[in-house]
Image (tube, rainbow, N blue to C red; front, side, top):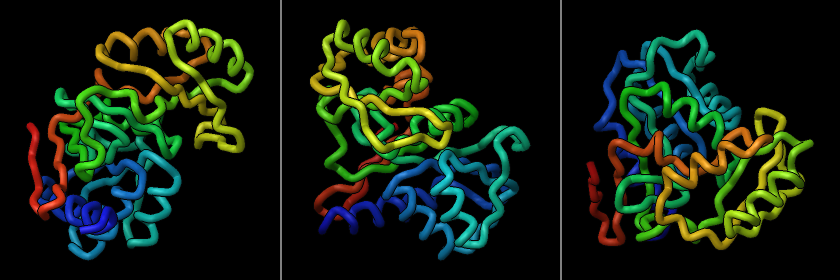
Amino acid sequence: MNQQALKQQVAAKALEYIEEGIVLGVGSGSTVLCFIEALARSGMQFKQIAAASESSAAALKAAGYYVSDLNACDPIDVYIDGADEVDPNKCLIKGGGAALTREKIVAACAKQFICIVDVSKMVPVLGKFPLPVEVIPMARSYVARELVKLGGEPRWREGVVTDNGNWILDVHYLDIREPAVLEQKINNIAGVVTNGIFAKEKAHIVLTSQADGKIAVFD
């Protein structure tokens, strides 16, 4: 089974964890696009839907859904999103698609966060995937110097501007054995909007599509 098929499989499985009439949060990324496609086929309707990126909002609208501004939403019942890495404690690295700040905000607003990934995203320790850090543009060089002090090698993702008008530094060569500690340290650097460690807002449930076609559930 190829990776796209695995993404489609786990995206379809996520439909079992939502029900009509709830307030739904939708993340971003390729697996989430598969979820939106599955959602459209299901015909399910919701009280409100909030999206964590402009691209996801556009996909939802194309599927016939009205997307609400998060400020106008009731509390989110379930948030569905993917991840770039997932550790055994359900802490995540997110932000490969540069939507980490809005994803973290929507996750914080949700009563339940369900992460959908294929098995390639499961790791024993976070950090092989470069850690995205969203920064205010004027602070890029300063933040990069501070990230070097933490043991990483930051690289500016040139040409990428987030939905919030900011820039991304991707931090290579981190061995993230204490995700919550590093998340807070990086967030305390002046000029950082947020970073892609999701430890405080980690997943409640992780659905993982396996190579044999089965779905593993970590709750």
